[in-house]
Length: 161
Image (cartoon, rainbow, N blue to C red; front, side):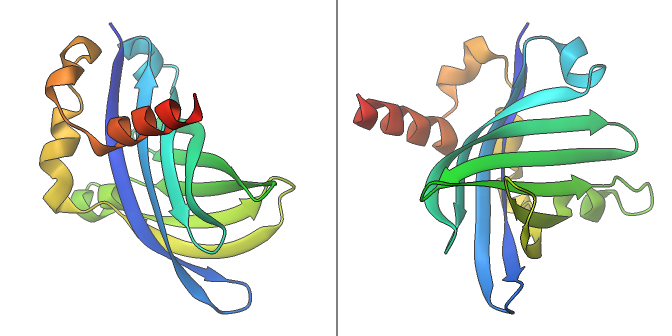
C-alpha cells in the first residue's frame, strides 16, 4: 500500500549579506510501501517552494530521510531563473521536547554547486495539524481530502499542457 503525507513548513532565511526573507515549502512525502517509508528511510518529496528573492513559487522535489529516533533530514531541490538550489534541513526528535523538536528545524539554502547562500529556521504550524493528519489517509482515500499542494500541482500541470 502506498503511504505518504503532506507537510507545510514556513520560516525565514538570512542571506550572507544580512538580508532576511521568507521561505515556505509545501511537500507531499510519499513511498510505495510502509517498509520503504520507515525501514529504508528514503521518501520522495514533490511540492511547491517559495523563497523570495531566490524563487517566487516553483515546483520542488527532493527526499526525506527518516532515521528514527535520531533525525528526519529534508533535501528540497528546485530551479529558478536557470539556477539550481538545495534547501537542506534537519529535525532532531527529543524525548524531553517532542513538540518543538518535531515542528522546528534549522535550514541552509545552497546552490547546486554547494555554495551557501543563506541560513534560517522553519516551523510547522500546529493549526495545520488537522490537515497534516488527514493527509496520512491511504492514496485511494485522498480524493476526499482537499489539500492545497495537490490542487496547486494539478493547476500547474494543466497550465503547462
